[in-house]
Image 1 (cartoon, rainbow, N blue to C red):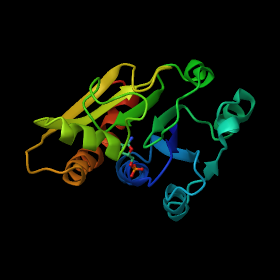
Image 2: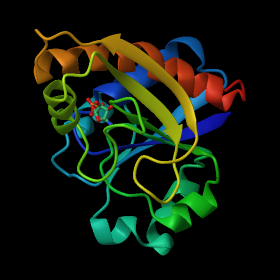
Image 3: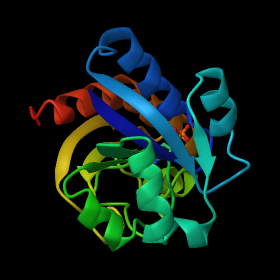
Length: 192
Ligand code: GRF
């Protein structure tokens, strides 16, 4: 059984989508054993409760403390970590403990529109203002810098002059929901 921790900071719609996909098709070999959030107000807590998955809020000083985070992940027998709308930088001790075992999704075509401050609507506004003809999602393993690391998968969608940051966000979210769960499973299976 491969056990996942999903790190979230906000809404948690990707987290919920991933859980449903895994429970529907891969419950015999993969489970989400815990959700971790840096934001105690995150709606992801509501979603985790309805999914009966333990959801732990950690303060920022706890998230950067190996003596807090690593035992917690061991308690839940976590093999791999998924960042789904998680906004904090991952500490190097966590990358060392989970080498090539941490996967992130970014709502743009990295390396463009990545890095510090580039998250959520900030990304879609920048894409819109730049007059880009396409955008998309990037799923990548993480290293110590924001939004760097080996790109595992990208999917694109067109952007027209009629698009707004909100309509771009909608297009990108549908790519996330369509591909992220499948890419996670293939990554676990060593197919990507
Ligand atoms: C998604 O757009 C994802 O690409 C980005 O943060 C957002 C998370 O949304 N990393 P949600 O919390 O999963 O609804």
